[in-house]
Image: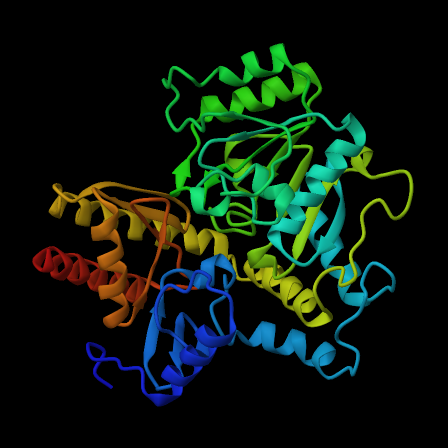
Length: 412
């Protein structure tokens, strides 16, 4: 097939039409109907093959069809009981994944609660903090994204469309500072000196907010304020966790000691990881019917972590990440009037455009050229390929991105 002329035939078009007829309007980025995948590539129903530079929003760190994952899910998939009420009944997969998560997390975080999604992981971290400190306001950052269920949504503020007409819990917001010299970098101390709060929650790298990378001083201030005022620090690692930034957890780049951590996406299920003193004394304070999604997802999550560990993928991904970042900065230098920044940590990378319309056009053009990109924030394209990506595919993606920018500029 000619990679410049992908088409959506009756098969894809029919699925899209049915979805739009029966499903509530959501966030579909482009007319891609996924059939299957292999390595860093996805194929749609019409035989078009795409290089995936968004890893299905960081949920596919090993790409597609990895043999370790295929092998891991065989037994639970054929068990005849793959969907278990995991907080009511025990399974090998639940126990194994929980133990593995603790093993890759700093030792003071020794308990895990598994659920289904990232927003549930955030909500349960919040609930455990409320349980210990009371129904006080929580503190989050401007530009944050912590999920869409109503509790987590209070602390999300990346886009107005997420929040209009929805009720909110008591909360306070502080700036998310990306520069140590930001005059607002110490604002957290003022908030905690003036009011009692139940917790502080932040990402180390804002995901949906635009791939904003926290400054060292800002994160250090949060840690210091947490310790001085006895306020738990929740770090949201739903998008950054499980090796994406070159370490298991993004907070490790900052030397933080969070009290609770939320994870999901790459681990295939939602997970709240916490200090033992935040575990409730009574059973049933937190629970969920599906308790980790299902045994297939639990087994896949464990296989992903073990494969990243066994194949040294964080180190390999960091090296490729440095190469991609150098390429993104070359692209920035080639288009200084329309590209304002290129930055990254490990394989969590971004390129910023001068305006959102051009960014959107580049994403659409790249899709036509068989490269899958996604926006973030108002003007950002995230570049988060699978951790298994090699130099050849990395360069191929950069070449298509460059061509897409050139073509999009010509169309303006």
